[in-house]
Length: 159
Image (cartoon, rainbow, N blue to C red; front, side, top):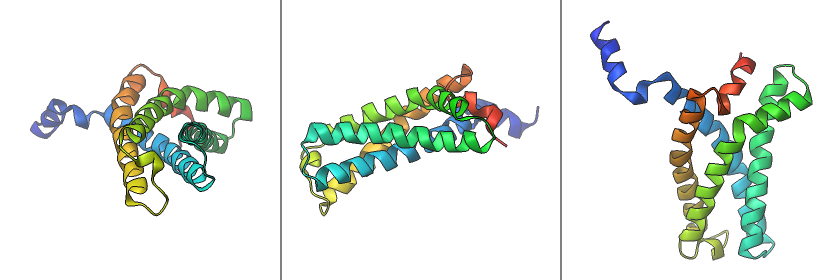
């Protein structure tokens, strides 16, 4: 074993599963961020109460998260049912963790849910909450991938 190879073995961050987990989490984060931002913007623009705005954001995060995964899987030539089942298996836990953390941070930041679209607090709290959600979901995805679950079920559809 070369010294360079031995060095990589000492750093868990270099583990291929960690790289896969980061990629899977970034993929999930994309769908979650689209849904979260859209939900918060719509809720704020329409003057919805905070509970309805958070619920809308969560629903849209799941819709966009699953849709992005389904798009990839459908691109591999499988049917709609298989794509949906794959998306559910690949993303449910990750999106759930992200949404719990993301919305928990949004709720915890004083004034964030009442900030307007023109307020720095509105946008900075969204960015902060999504970044923290990414950090929280990555080890969860790593754990799932190591057990052949989560985004590991999508392996056969990647080209």
